[in-house]
Length: 194
Image (cartoon, rainbow, N blue to C red):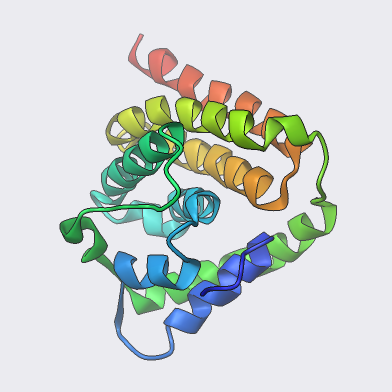
């Protein structure tokens, strides 16, 4: 059984351990390494991908939107195990850009982990995680649109990283910040079109 991830540095280390062999890393391998009960680390992972240079790969933000939608719906349903279709689990990303992104995040991750701690527990336990999932659903639905709006997918990625970190570290104060970031990401969409 995979060790429970409690901060961003642990997630990055676990992902880097996957890059030792193959040239492409499948989503199925990532989820197996994170564990089937790993809703919060998966939110964190989606956010990392959207904020990183990997988000420049055409179609990747849309794929992350599909993954986010499936994860969020299962969180709202209070499922104990994450289920994803085989076609999504078979999707892969190249090893080299993944390693570059992991190294890009290493220093900020160590700094962020220093500030995380359990607080405002009501925000991150069952009702809080359901509220988080409820907020993530509109982000998931809008990610295909955000793919064409400059910086909006990155801002959504930052919000998802914050949600994921808050749930992983049980930090309710960080959860409140994530709600503000989500509002900012969603507010960009009508501003861009009108």
